[in-house]
Length: 145
Image (cartoon, one colour):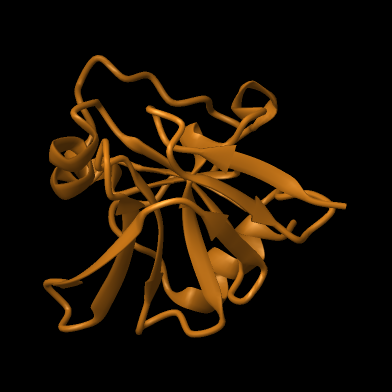
């Protein structure tokens, strides 16, 4: 089975070769707020190598504050960010969940960087939240529960 998505203008379409994506989280850091133009970025984790795309995908690399390299993929027409791979998380990609075709069915399993969240955003009590990015083992356990 596959999961599909695409950019805002429709020039890029992608397919992720997985049955489902459950590892959804919201990132409230100020970088994500600026990049998304919103209060947070909703993201979905998938195995690297499972995504394929058609259309004008551009790639650019951003150095993170920790020194990791974030390899971003975006539409070459409308510049919608679609997914990225990060050198600090080998073997995975992070898909912008809002670009998935069926994004209304997604339920975040965690909220991170909540120390930077907008004060009017109210988080559910039953979803784990972290002040910053948690340790990888702890974060992976929350996302795969």
